[in-house]
Image (cartoon, rainbow, N blue to C red; front, side, top):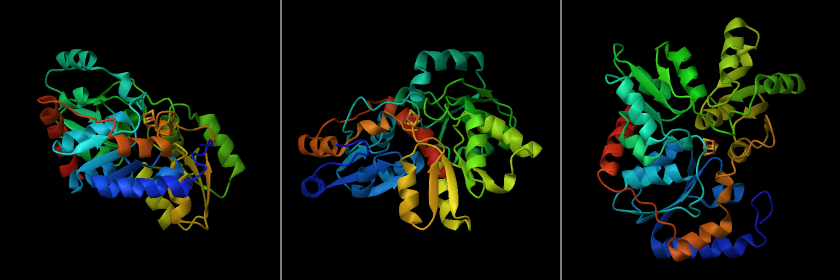
Length: 321
Ligand code: SF4
């Protein structure tokens, strides 16, 4: 496989995969940050929220999850009677690793009355200790659904937490975790790309390291609010389809540009940084996807009572939207 995830013989592995899918009654779910070739064979491509919703409604017996481990765990929590597979068990997440259950229990003990809101990029153990889950696509709605007199603990993404604090004006305690891919986007990079592509609209993911300063710059008028949008990956995709603009600079993992190019082939999309790729997402290759379904590896399971405790937090989120 080359660096773009392209295999030498696409037709052969795609044919084998199609046969295995039918044999196993499997559905393939792929995250927006997967290699283009994997997105193209998936039954559903989306962000964490869309993938959780797709897992919850599938009638397939097997869910082959092309994403990272916490996402497969979320599917396993939502679908206890299905087989959930991930093609590489090493596909983790630096953000999910930024808090463990001991740390969360200690934090909760310091704020015993607080409502715990966990970004979906967390382990099953963390979800089981949480009141709500959220994704970047519905985090504002989740925070707004919590009664205003309740104290909030938000974890684990520091930048998303600050974005929520400023957007909803709800005071909250925020865990200092970050994603190594998004935290690397600094305001200087935004300034350089704005100068290079003055006609382009700017799409920024709320996990990015530049988001707090960009919000301040937007509020003070230092950044043109007209052309700058802070959006989840699905929000970005929708925006590129609806906007009159023809060029976009995209500040999130570069995998999402494949869907944007497919949906709007006449528009131009520039990654804010070509190297903005998630090494965990890119561990999933076409060869591993075929191997996974052929050998039925690697099953992801979440034992009880962890699963039912985590399910409550996820279902509260799904009920909000
Ligand atoms: S891009 Fe960041 S948050 Fe997403 S899976 Fe990779 S490490 Fe985790």
